[in-house]
Structures are given as structure tokens and as C-alpha cells.
Amino acid sequence: MHYLTIARDGTAEIEEKRSRFLCTLARVEEEADARAVVERLRKQHWDARHHCSAFVIGPPPQPVERSNDDGEPAGTAGAPMLEVLRGAGLSDTVAVVTRWFGGTLLGAGGLVRAYSDAVRAALDEVGTLRRELVREYEIEVAYDAAGRLETDLRSAGVAVLETTYGAAVTLRVGAPPAEEKRLEALLAELTAGGSVLVPGVDRWVDR
Image (cartoon, rainbow, N blue to C red):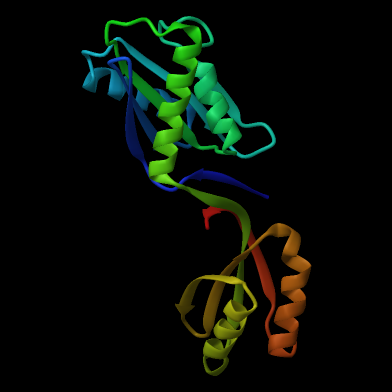
């Protein structure tokens, strides 16, 4: 299982009929964090008229989604911003578009376009990365076989997360839960049955 999120926090600004639209994108993992970003920007840009927002949090198939027009005509700001995030397949992301009014009304269509374009411009700036659900495993191996096993696992596409040296060497590796049987078979082949795969916790990691 996997999904996309932004590669880093960032901003982009566009202008439409002298109105400025500054989009801020931030990585968040809780709804409270997303709302905190909105409030921070509201205080930072106190002279702006609107701070419209949209966020998607959590893995598919049922992420938390929210949007807010913050005083703009209903459906002209937050909802279009949310559609851009959805269309890009993003989660764990909050978008806030801060608008300074330029004196000319844009109309509903103009607002939808401007808010959407601001989010797209910011996405172009920050890029995306993939988050993947992996299960962590521990493998205990003798010192004289550890280096070769680590190399062979990496060559087979297995993520080696950590190597710990004690009485023996413990490799902590990560793989999608669905690949556990394949990983067991690979380990049996590489160690002639001399090492055992010990499952640990599942967690989301950036790729």
C-alpha cells in the first residue's frame, strides 16, 4: 500500500488582476497540525483578506479531507484547492492560499481558477514523494556472514534500515507486508536456512 505526499514544505505566488494569491504547502500528519498551519499564516499575514485552506490527511482509502473558503463565495476557494490535492493523489498535506485583494472582483470562475492555479504552482515548486507501508523485520546473523547478507538483500531490493552489532549482527529490514513470504524464501536461500525472519511493527516510510 502506498500514497503520495509533498517532498518538502514550500510556497508559490501568483497574481490575478492585482490580487495576490500566496499558496503555502506543508506536510502534516494530524488535523490539529493542519489547523495550526492555517492559524500561523493568519497571524503572519494579518493584512490579507482571506486565508483559504484544504487538507488531506491519512492513507487511502479513507483519508480525512477538509476545506474552508474563509469568506470567499461558497465553493470558489477551499473546494477547488482540495480538488487539486486529490487530483495529484496527495495526502498528509495542507494547502493554505492567502489572498490580498487587488480591488477588482474576479467572479466565481476567476476565483476558482486563481485558487486552483496557486496550489498547482506551489506543487510544482515542492514536488512529491511516495510513502509506503512497510513491515520491519529483524534478522540475526553471524559476523562473518553479515556483510555479504546485507549486500545480497540490498541487491534483491530489500531496504536495510539498520545494522546493530552485539553478540551477533542484527539487521533490521523493511518490506511491504504482502512480501513476507517472498522475503522468508529469499532469506532461506541466502543463508541456507541459517537465519530466521522475526516480524516487527508496520509503519509508513518515505521512498
